[in-house]
Image 1 (cartoon, rainbow, N blue to C red):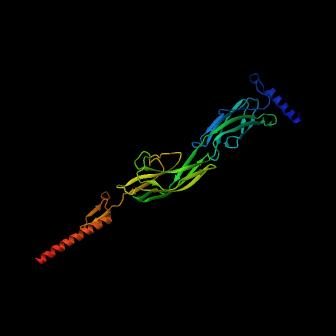
Image 2 (cartoon, one colour; image 1 turned 30 degrees about the vertical axis):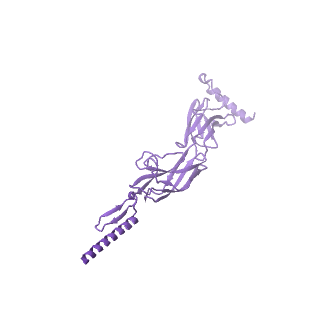
Image 3 (cartoon, rainbow, N blue to C red; image 1 turned 60 degrees about the vertical axis):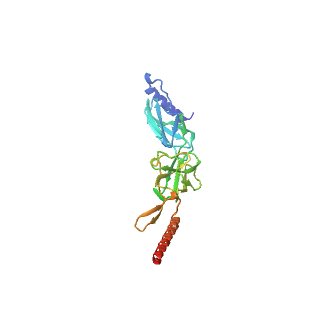
Length: 316
């Protein structure tokens, strides 16, 4: 044993003899510390909170004041907690370790270690005399995926039979590498959720998807959709882009959406010269062009009848 070690041991033995009393006779002679934490399992849900806390206590049952070094070890997480703690003889010190994750760490189970070691006692370096105390915590990192959509516009107004075209930027953060299909949803303005689409609304655009890797992903999608050509009244609803995790959209008020207004089809009109209008109804199966032809024929017959009657009067 080296002379330095012998001197230090002699100092501690001497101090022990001086300070020891019957009620502390169970105290240890050599410097040391006890480490205990409340949690040995930790669950982190990054979608709710990216960090959780571990609560620990250091106990010094030695007859001298100690300085303790605290270290945290994990390849996946970052920590916030004290690096050194000073503890008086026969006392305890509590401390909290904040364990923080990031979106690029995959879900699963991980190990983290908290270690404590006495560095000085009564001001004398004693690291070569002490053992390191260790506390292991198993951390479960839950899966999460969070996405946002940016449509670029608040509303779209078209006429019946027009093609609706718009774009959307879809971005996600996740701790799971994955590919998700993005779907277009149509919800009536006052509906509580998506129902059967009105006949005539059909998607023309090709499939769009988002690839998430290393914690994030972005997709820019173009959407095209037909509208009914025979609407008799205005249609009001909303367009919603969702990924495949959600099959049915909620109401227009609960989802991020774009207002869609489709005006009814324009009817053909013939004026009678007195300012009143006669509407040619599609229900009769007569188009505006056909109405003009029929009207022209009737006018021609009337002219022939008038000409014939005038001729008979002249002859008589």
